Length: 480
Ligand code: ADP
Ligand code: MG
Image (cartoon, rainbow, N blue to C red; front, side, top):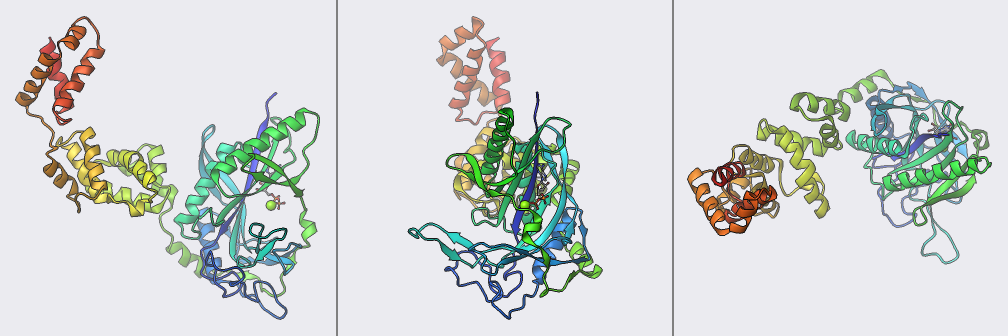
């Protein structure tokens, strides 16, 4: 009997405002503990929170980007609970009426193809402080700098059916929030973290009981945690047990989830509208302005790349994972004229590997878009072979020449121009045949592999510069 996996994700994206969501205290990461928590952030008696316009605007931008409804009137509510990192005793969030309702994020599922993941809602809320367990022997430290940091909590419908899909969604969302400039996406610093709700059921059965795995801050951990949790639930039910609804934590060292607390219900929090904050009212003009300032979105750009540059969908998707990458592609493809597929191949192959090795992002690539284009033009016009081009690329990477003509300069100084002169190639082929009688004999005895070995000898003798197509043709002719 088969099992179906059902997953819904809740993502906390930290909004990239300079100040907190209800106070003027700074949000910068890494300050000395408790130096950035203002009286408002910890709700000392007599303070009044004021909503941060920048945080609201980022929520609007998100709502527009995912095709959601922007509620013209939403309400901040108090979510009451006790925890050492929340001395105020409640978190300001949105409950009954969130600022963003509905919408969807497109993903490519390995099993189902293109899928639109439905969003339930996205609401504004403040972050709590942080408990510090390291460096305190037998005690816990509390750092309230993070208290009041603006978050957008983005909730999906239970539409995801595997850990692969959950990761695909999380990556698409991560790319999107950075694309529209509302979150820096720094997962190590906790700026983008996900909770995964996981359940299993028999096909056609009603939804099973879910467990929520908290605070997944890497895509790898998300995949592992969900896979572990699915196995755990299936085994549990198979052994006659039942899944209890609870909150679990993922332990990356042991690669397992374990119970943290039983799941609280909404009523446990006694939500009520915050009397200190008026309803959040968003006018049409504000929405229109944000819409006007919206960049072209990755989905639209992806389709345009397929249409205008004749790229395969997978290449177009890979090149639209960040605005910087997409901009580099358009600059290089424009300069290389008609070599868009070659630009994509090099960007996703050689260049991506080099950037990875050097731990650089595309914006800091030592090889600029114009330089890559200059190189690809020389492959296209036959000046150099694809193989030599890799050496030219390495030389450009090392900074051996500068400017858009860097490839030409390197080809000239290093004498890398491809040999396409038939007479010259014939001479090298003759020499190779004369110098390798044993291989020639093998070839004549019917060993096809010997031919490739002779091609290798010719290419080596020409220092890789002979035109490979001509070498093949001439060698074939000479060997009869
Ligand atoms: P809560 O407010 O307690 O976190 P919600 O009902 O808002 O609960 O759901 C939170 C997330 O859990 C949503 O992403 C939703 O899609 C998902 N979810 C709800 N029921 C299930 C289920 N049976 N299996 C998997 N995910 C679920
Ligand atoms: Mg939840």
